[in-house]
Amino acid sequence: EGRSWQAGAEVSRLAAAHEDVFAEGEFASLEGVPDGADWAGARRLGDTMVVALLNGSGQPRALSLTLPAGYARAEEFFTGEAAQAGAAVALTLEPGDARAWVLTR
Image 1 (cartoon, rainbow, N blue to C red):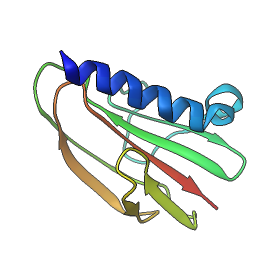
Image 2 (image 1 turned 60 degrees about the vertical axis):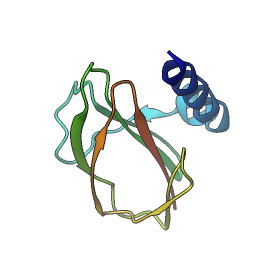
Image 3 (image 1 turned 90 degrees about the vertical axis):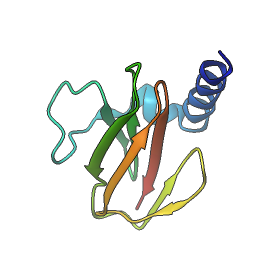
Image 4 (image 1 turned 45 degrees about the vertical axis):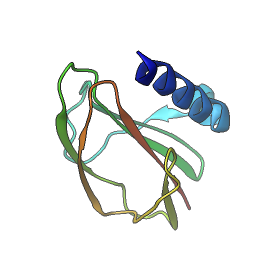
């Protein structure tokens, strides 16, 4: 289906834009997200952190997390919408959908 092609392209765009974070960064824990969760993750390198929410299920899924505090700038990568470091994020993702926030100090 077209949505999976678009999702693959968007994830590739994210990985290319922040290749150093994915290649050399460390996994970071997120407050309120259990270790090993299949629906959220973060990588950090220097002053940059990428935080992602993912819906790998076949049904719409309501997800939430709190973006890490202590960053001067936060932006949702796919939409370009500004976000606030330290703020709670709650949304419903369609199957195969994802959101990713890039936080910088």
